[in-house]
Length: 399
Ligand SMILES: *Cc1c(COP(=O)(O)O)cnc(C)c1O
Image (tube, rainbow, N blue to C red; front, side, top):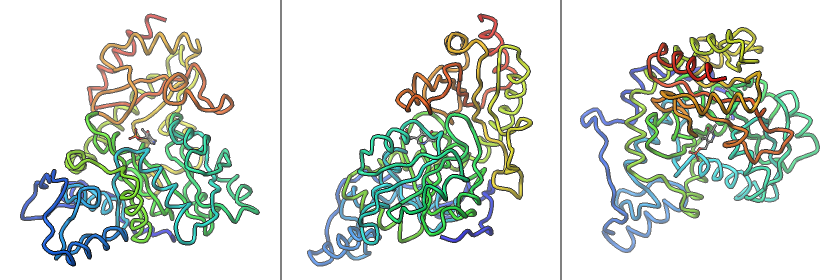
C-alpha cells in the first residue's frame, strides 16, 4: 500500500464524532446472539456476504453475532476514520488481532506457501512469543532495526509480512516507519501502534498495510475492557472478517461500546498523560539511582528526528522505561514500594502503572533479547504529576 501523507491528524472534534450518527449520538448496545431470518434465500444471501468478509445485506439481516454486530461495527468505523484507513476489524484482544493478521498474511489467495515473517525486536512479549514459537505456522527472522529489513527479505520470496512496533514495548524506542516502508517494498507491513494511539501517529501515512492496537490499553483507557483492532484496506479487512468468523476471536459488543465511548476522550487523555510523562521522565533522569531513562522526549531519545507536528509522532507518548543502577534488587524495591502508582501489568489506563518486564510481560523472551533485570516500565496516567513524583520519591527512599 502506498503512503498517504495527507491523512488528517486526529482532532478532538473527530474523536468525539467518529462513527456516530448525528441524530443519535450514543451508540446502541445490541447484545443479540442471533437474529430473525426473513426468508431462506434472503438469510442465505446475507450469510454468503458475511462469510465473504462483507457486510450483511439489508434484506437478510445480521444473522449471528459471530458474523456481525452493529455496536462493534460502530467502533470499527470510528477507529478506521481516526487512522485514516477505509476499514477496521475488531477482535477479542490485541493478541487475537495480531493472530488474525498473521493468518490473513499466510493463508488465502496469493499467500499460499508464504510463511516467513520478519520482525523487529524489541516488541511486546506476547507478539515475541507468538512469532518465536511459530504457533500459527510462521517462521520468524528477528532483526534489530529498519536498516536490517532488506537483508532479511533478500532471497525470501516466501515472506508474508513484516511486523514492527513503535514506540516499542518496553523500551519506548521509536522506529522510522518511512524507512521500514522503503525496505519492505511490496511486502505488506504491520505496525503495532498501541503505545502511540491514532492521536500521536497514523502509520498509514507511512505506508503501513495493517495498523494494530491493543484497545485494552489507551483506547479503552480505564483498565476495564479487553479488545484488539486492525485498521486496514477493504481487501485485508474482508480477509480478517472471514478469519474472525472462522476462528471466533470476536470482540464482545459491550467491549465495542466501551471502546467507542473511550475514543471520545482519547485525545484529552493522551495529551494530558504526555505532559505528566515528560515531567516524570525528567525527574527520573536526574535521580542518582537511575542509570538510564528510555523516553523519546528526553535529549537523545529521538535520534531519527521523528517527533513533531509535521513528523511521524506528534508528542513523545506517556510510556517510558528506566534502568536502575542497583539492577534487579533496586527495581524490585521500587516496584514493591510505590503506593499510589499501581504495580500491575497492562498500560494506558487512567491510573499510573509500573511493571518489571523481565519477570512479567517479557519473561519468556529469548535471553539475548530479554529486557535488563534492572528495567522498569512505566505507564504514566492521569493523576497530578506532583503526586506521582512524591510517590516515586517515597519508593526510592527505600533503596
Ligand atoms: C498489551 C499489548 C498487546 C496485547 O494486547 P491484549 O489486548 O493484551 O491481547 C499487544 N501489543 C502491545 C504493544 C501491547 O502493549
